[in-house]
Amino acid sequence: MVPGTGGGSTTPERPSPVTDVWETSLPAPAAGDAVTRQRRYVLGGLLAVLALLAGALLADVLATVFFAITVAYLLFPLREELTRRGLSLWRASFLTTLLAALAVLVLAAPLVLVVVARIDAIVAFLAGLPPTLSVELYGYSASVTLSQARTTVVSFGRQLARSFAVVAPVLALKLTVFGMVLFALLSRPADSHRGSLAVVPAGYRDVVQALSRRTRATLFGIYVLQAATAAGTFAVAFVLFLMLGYPYFLTLAVLAAILQFLPVIGPSILIAVLAVVHLAAGDPTRATLVFTVGLLFVAWLPDVVIRPRLSRETADLPGSLYFVGFVGGLLTVGAVGVIAGPLVVGLVVETAELLSAELNDVDVSEE
Image (cartoon, rainbow, N blue to C red; front, side, top):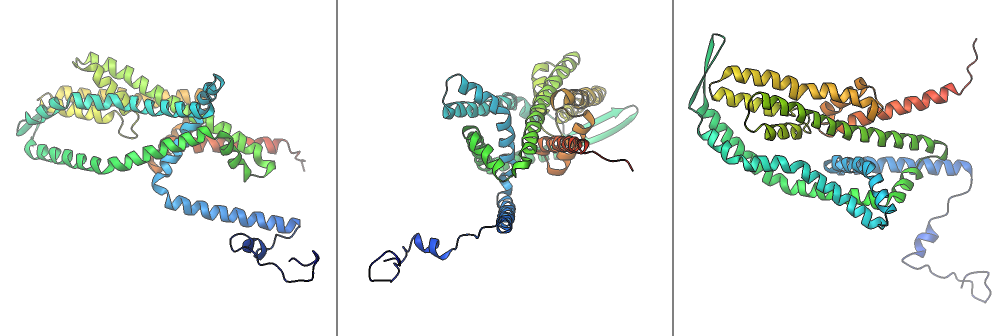
């Protein structure tokens, strides 16, 4: 019996080996502002350490999770609209996630279909290459042995196929992680919002909300810019390839637009392949024309003209800052930097505006 409850025995009851032992052996924290503040510091430090540990262990999927979060920011309005139309939260989130997956498939389908449809022509072209190619341009001539190059290309293709077979399961796992994270964020928005704000002091939650609004606007601008750049690339490539007399000008224009989503190389790889084809056919003048004009108008011009002009209207960023974030993020962290770079620049701009507003509200006496 417990002391003080009456009865003759004063022997304390033994705690339960499952739960009571923890409750009786760990004293409750003492009251006081100093202890409460110290406890918050310890919990904050523990959170930081565990976050770094999780980042180190999950490094291979961090880019996938980051991409899923950015897509979730953009799909929240669609999920809310479906909910307003009578769908349950679960069904609206599932349908939104399914639409996102279908959009990715639609984006990748033309490239796959073109490669599959033209694979016979590609193989026939490689088989029909002469053993030696002579190139004459403006009085200069050079001979290139293609037999070794053809062997290298075939070997590279086989190695690429083997690499894809190895990477395919990993890619499938990452796509699964992407879908699960996206669905979780869409189906539990209140929990995600509450969890992100719970560790922020009350006096700074308006800052977090302002950064969240800037994040959504910047991400929307980034994806709109990417789609607009791809559309502009398709229009320019369509006109260029039609004027140059290519029989498959529509296919080439679609390929150029899709390749615009690939960082660094983009449509330039298509232009280089066309130039090599003309060189192999003994037409160096046409190869030079396609290479120079194609790189200028298809691979370079849409990036330089469309992105900076639309960045102010869509992402609310100056064109120069957007371009710095785009290039800097790409060169620093790779493909994910295309999104992360401009996003970080946008958050820096928003924080600078918040700080400027705070400083302008403070009276500064002139000495």
